[in-house]
Image 1 (spheres, rainbow, N blue to C red):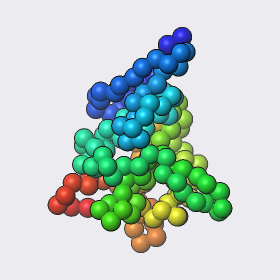
Image 2 (image 1 turned 135 degrees about the horizontal axis):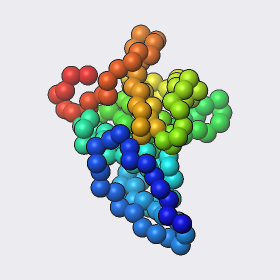
Image 3 (image 1 turned 60 degrees about the horizontal axis):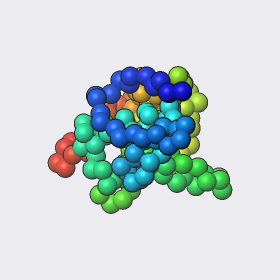
Length: 153
């Protein structure tokens, strides 16, 4: 049975996929490997492409499944983009298209960011997107961050 994934609210992107038995796998250029194509991975691949093509994030600064040590338990942020010092600048939490971006999703990202201290948090289910800027101990709605050299931040 072929998996039907929704058209997402991102610019079109070319993704490489293959069949492996009864599973569809998608190439993850960040990790350099094929991964099982899940609804969340579909969103993650689109957001990664958007960050590179439209926000100027260099591909080598994107880390998928970024480790977050939280209360002695290993957690993983979906996507973290690091700045030129290697510090987290953007933390993104990706959900499947049918998952609402409610307070619990924001709370999850804020918990991760209590450790990482990224300036921006992005929440997306591929159809809706929320971006927040962390400044002066508060999260405020913001536009998508731009990380092009020389761009205003």
